[in-house]
Length: 479
Image (cartoon, rainbow, N blue to C red; front, side, top):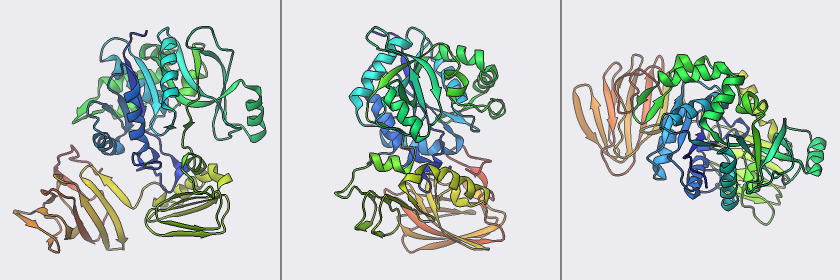
């Protein structure tokens, strides 16, 4: 029996560019409902309930995603998790270091179960069994990684070459080497040898053991993260890492920073029907399919199609005579590609970023702690939005230097602050907010408030917001 507390560390900072156009920098794949009613993050958190003697989790995410993470935890009834905010992306090695330091501040020297937030694991019993075995080895000071028993010559994953299983209940195998994503012929050779496993990116180790190894190989990461934690500030339910300190950390993945260099690494094999949802091809593999091997989501109608994935978000999607094709539609973008080219999406997104296309990084619908807004139409001097405000939520008390706003209530009840006036509006009623006037919008009702906002002015950027009061600690910021 193990005695050390086990603290899950959930990494929520990925961008998921291979699942564009659905996954984007401002709303990446871990927050999407790709498979079922719950998001990938919610599924990850719910799996933790089956692990014995597990302490409240530590999640680490980008500052811009903080309210999405908090809301998705609230939706599934999780209220005791700690959320660390990265002021800038510095990859997984610093993120885990910050979480390890936070875990140590709780007392003792806990084991950390490090999990990405965007994986699918269908065989929960096999997952729990592998975690139990890994805890036994990690108690002894080893850095344990989980190797996925390969089901085929996959070229989208990195691999781990492992030695023979050691005696004992954990059946741990020494890590001989990490290898990069192979070509098809090399992957087939790996599979035939029986010594290679897919690199899952999941780990168990003591917080102190990880920091000791990281100090040996990357002392600048530990120094930067230690200072960032020392100077961190509690911000409502979030722990905000010091920006200046954290930005000094080298940008390195945990594999490169520690696991490929340590002599203390071992592996526990896991055969749990695992999928890292790293491409649209992997979404197709994990999805339910019809008699023609097609996976469909949304309003989709197919005729004489086989082996396709069609994901519609905002309109009817039809296809005729397609084979091995991926079609993904959002309100502002359409992706069509051969399924064998699914790993190439990342290059497409890089090109979109180079050409400064906003579709590369953000959706038309933007989420805020109070709800969301959808940009319906944008012109040179006007911007039309559909705004949804959650029950009991309130936008900040604010003003604008360059724009006026006209609000039309579509459904629900709006409580309006307009200068020194305060009043209620209901369906089909409207109001006008002149340029420079302090104003706010609140939903006092029991149902979501929906309204149309028409902005007009010489400059309509989101940074033309001067927040005077805010329920979410955003005074002086635009997010």
